[in-house]
Image (cartoon, rainbow, N blue to C red; front, side):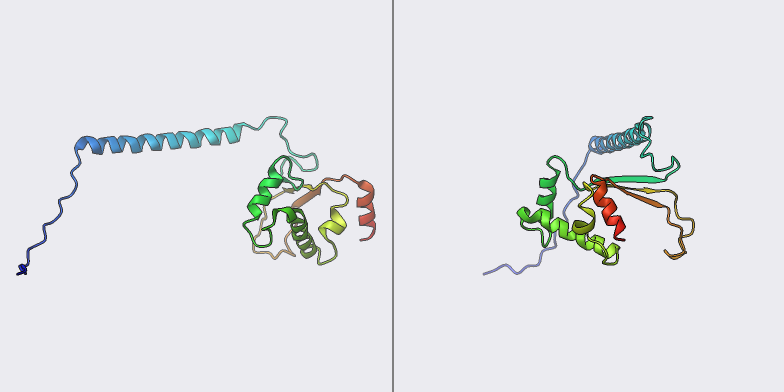
Length: 174
C-alpha cells in the first residue's frame, strides 16, 4: 500500500555566511574597484601626456585641426594574412587565396559609389598610390541641422603618391 499522506514542504534554510565572509567580499570588491580606477587614470595619463613635440601631425593640416586618422591598404607584416583570415568569416571572402581580388572589388564598389560611377579603385587610383591615405577634420560642424550641401566641408583627404605621372594622367582625364 502506498502512503498518500500530504506532508508540508520543509523550507530550505538560507545559506549561512559568517561576518568574516561578508567583510572579505567587501574588501575584494573595494580592491578591484581601486585597481580599475587606478588603471583608468594611468591609461588616461599616458594617452594625454604621451604626445611628444615631434607628434604634430602632417604638415598639410593646421595645428588647430580637431582629428586626424591614417590608414594603410598595403597591410605590412602579417596584417594581410590576419585580415584575410578574419574576412573569411564573411560572405564572399571564404577563399583566402582570392582575398586580394575580392578586396579590390570591394574598393572598386566604394570608389565607384563615391564618384558617381566615374572612377574605380583598380582603374583610376591604384595605379599611382600605394594605398596609404589619411583624413583630417579641421573643425567640428557648427550647425548639424544644415543639409550636407549647405554645410561647409572641413575635411582634408590625402593619398600617398608613388607615380606622379600616372596621377597627372588621371587628373587630365577629369
